[in-house]
Image (cartoon, rainbow, N blue to C red; front, side, top):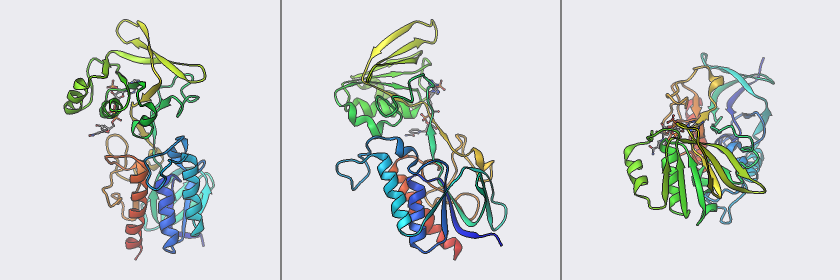
Length: 304
Ligand code: NAP
């Protein structure tokens, strides 16, 4: 007889390991299936200083390890494998991975969302050190400095507004002649005195030696290239939720995020979505961990 878990948690970021901690602490038989290493997106962040309890801030990788260790203290196990497919049709759910097939009564999906990258040569090298994907996480390092925000959606415009409160100067570079963002945010942005809007341009090069000193932008109409001297680049061009492996077994929104409300329940009974992969307003470590706890509460209710 193949083993049947109470809960399989797919993804070992903050939402996943919080679910693992709550589940194992409640005496449920659970396993986390993680592709690489714990921490998710958080592990790529140098300093997390908006997670309560760490008054000096904490390295994102270290916080991921702490969450793993805490879950393991209560008996949670991790299987390092990639999930390739799922089958949620029956009462017992199947999770197919590169390490074989797992069976479970409930599943918590915690696979997160990866920031879309521009695809520039040295973008990865300076990620977290001049090139950033989360203004709310890393903006405070740019107090009284000059930053460039790339993008024209709600996130980019909100990021530019947020950064304008601490940076000396903010350029927002967008490849079209008008924002995609909601009017109310755009109007606020237009009023911000230290924000310069650069339409019809995109960032084509990161200028850096030891640290980032500027970006090259290229006009989308006439191909003219200019340099903006700056200290940081915030890439706000959307995110890709990691939901491809689900093959439509749960309902997604138009952006590919899993539709589940604050209860974290998806449209499939016994399947929950937590953290950044869930359609939600604020994607932060603090909201991810809350989801993890909530999912286990409702999973326990389902199991009973
Ligand atoms: P988004 O709406 O998809 O906008 C992405 C932006 O980045 C677009 O302006 C797009 O340009 C640009 N872009 C994409 N790829 C690019 C590239 N390679 N180079 C340069 N520019 C590129 O993403 P989002 O702003 O992250 O928002 C995601 C969803 O969350 C949206 O539905 C948004 O409304 C929602 N959201 C809501 C709020 C709120 O209501 N407060 C806040 C944040 C986000 P184009 O315009 O040319 O496509």
